[in-house]
Image (cartoon, rainbow, N blue to C red; front, top):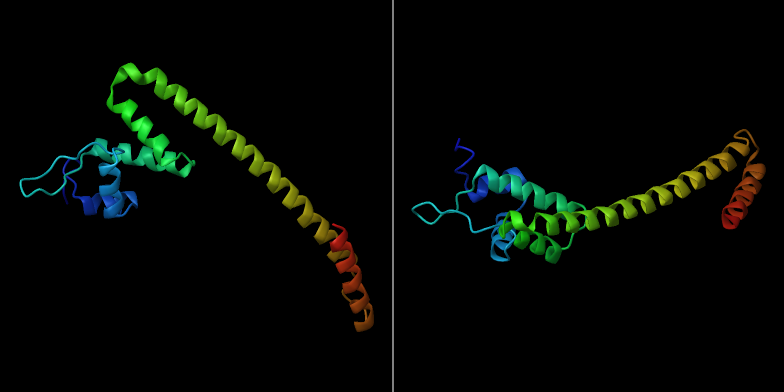
Amino acid sequence: MESESNLSIKEVATRSGLSVHTLRYYERIGLIAPVARASGGQRRYRGADLEWIGFLLRLRATGMSISGMQEFARLRSAGDGTAGARRIMLEGHLARLLGEIEALQQAAGVLQAKIAHYRQIEHSLAPDQPIEGKQHATRTLRQRTRQA
């Protein structure tokens, strides 16, 4: 197996979960700095490249846009003088992400309450009712469900 500092694009694709096409695209649009090439022209990735790709995947997973990721990559490539701008950018992204998480938690709470409500209705229906009673209970359940 090749060393961590001499990985082919196929190996990086396998490790990162990205396609070869996506890796080339990311390089073309500036998300990944130009990758070193072997004598035959094949891309050769380093461990640092893999770490950066992993960070990009986390940004993407948290909903950062491609243009946002490009801006972050541009700032990163400009050096340590942009550390403050990068921090501010990540703080803003984190604040948006935490807001989305809070909204999802609230929505999940509403769903949990509805599920509990429907369980309560189901439990209130006696399982040993005669067929006619079950049909009535089903109508009652539909009426209660509409009300919910």
